Amino acid sequence: MSWELLLALLGLLAFVVLLLYFSRADGDLTLLWAEWQGRRPERELTNKVIWVTGASSGIGEELAYQLSKLEVSLVLSARRVHELERVKRKCLENGNLKGKDIFVLPLDLKDVSSHEAATKAVLQEFGKIDILVNNGGRSHRSLCLETNMNVYRELIELNYLGTMSLTKCVLPHMIERKQGKIITINSILGVFYAPLSTAYCASKHALRGFINSLRSELTTYPGIVLSNICPGPVQSDIEKNCLTTDITKTLGTNGDQSFKMVTSRCVRLILISMANDLNEAWITEQPFLLTTYLCQYTPSLAWWIIKIIGKKRISNFKKNSNTDDFRFWKRKRD
Image 1 (cartoon, rainbow, N blue to C red):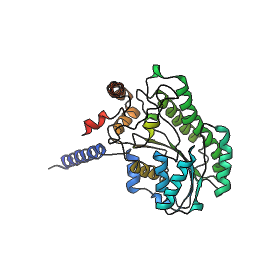
Image 2: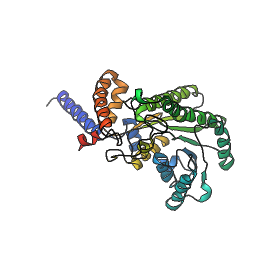
Image 3: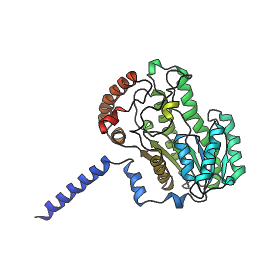
Image 4: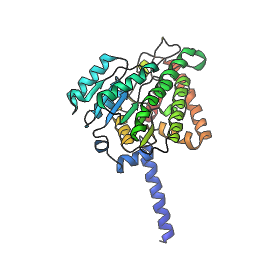
């Protein structure tokens, strides 16, 4: 056998192995490489002051639990104080922190006038802010022409303007210290798009653009890291609480969540991204991961696929308007 043929066979084998690996991947390849060979959160996040918004449920709540097992100081923010206190109690029961290490700080992201005072409260409590995790937000499910403008205003004010405002309040402190991390939990729908989510996609695309543009303004501060973290479907209450055609109406149920990523796995990958200073990370399983790559590198092909998905998604939603509308993927995967 010639060397050329041997090299060709080895290359083909490597390509097949990569395809098999990618078919089971639950994050982009840079993120998974960081998980394998990168820095560990258990070392990189030690002694950090970490402020998590949207900490009363879902990804934010799980972030609190996993961070509480490290040597950190936690600030937990959301609107529902009783839920924050519940999360704090569970952190103290199952984590390695003491009461003085967790600061419950009620916060309404839409009330931008309160953000400066909230930032000062954190600095007064812990003296610094090493990491801000912008996790607060909300989703929606309805057709554009059936959706009132108040839903669009709500999501832009909450997902985009609220997050931008808090970032602007915390950033001067990080610039003064010449270090810090702003981790923004965006969405896969901030990279590509889908029907029934026009308001949500618009807010998340705006947020991704803001963070990426802001990062380009901070090149003289290499110690400040801005990250867009983009999860796909994750097991949480986001569907139950998402808006529909009006600001007074919510979906009211989480539906079938069996096809979604387990929240603990998603959060572990977020911590990996945080520890390795990734500018952007995609955290999702197939077929959403492949679709994200196609949107990034072959948008015309991606549009053809999303058009097919979109028809099924709309049909499924109309038939089962009170359940999750991506569950037809679970049947395919089974």
